[in-house]
Image (cartoon, rainbow, N blue to C red; front, side):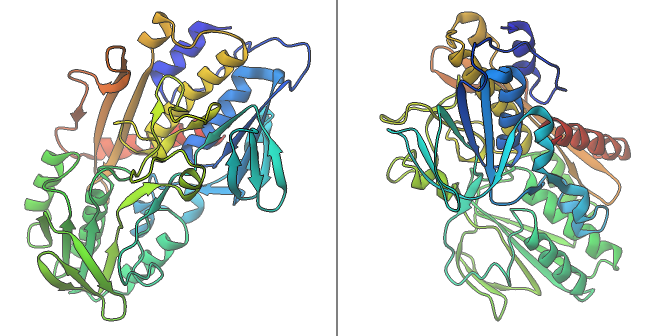
Length: 421
């Protein structure tokens, strides 16, 4: 086992891949790992389990589509800096590492028998299964996401939202809602507000962006977004914290909120979020909870009866933020643990626990040519058994800049390559 290589990957999160010797077994494919979900979490896990495990581990990646559309950078599609094809990735490319891909839907698991149920292909056995299905949305009364798209899963709704923004009058009103935390990508909604405001400003600055935040304050990059809203987008962005959505009228484009009725030309309603339907159906989310409790040294479920079931990415219930970069980092910790377990190694050694580190980094476009950034580092705390924010690791850019905007593309390309290529 090449422990130093694995430690390096755990520490760096989205580092470039290098080969590791993996485990040595007399029989190729002696173990089988099924990964359900092909986003940043699932694709990275499948790639690295196979890369680090070698021929002794057969890895099957199951996803409803053969491609994944990245939420990261998808806001740039709204103002035309990127096209949808620029953020779409072919999951079959992981076949270069020996990952088997099945285009199908995982309808459920039988943890006792260690089987997954594929909608079209029936039951498939596994030694370990990784659930990486992203998230799902809670119901908002009256919401029709085809008319009022959230575009919080990139793809068809991104196209709808772009078309609606393009069709807005120059003095139009863009109303968006931000759900209670935790939700996917903490700075993402504020980034979208800036994107919409930049589009309207370029049209003459007569339009308005109304931001209805269910949270008491800005959840990420507070200094940056507060400054952006009050300076370059002054008179365009109206930020209103502590406002919750009660219902939506998709036809009249009106939102009923705790602060009254608000209407607009475009409603971008981002609903409250919870673990994916697959994760909830699988039984690894306790009754009354929204997220799956896991042990962050392996991301294996902590619930009784679910040995061998791992949950990574947005659906897991640690205190770590839900983001693509974080999903990539968690996937490597999970992959390392699975390979070690198959090899009969301890995953709770003092040396390994000390080196379980994840990072959530992101860049946020503030204007059409400038961006800011945010980073936070989490480490495993032996005393609590949890991932905690490391002291002095939370940082954000002092200001937005063109240099940050250029670096944003390098960051995204590196993360995409590490996850999907």
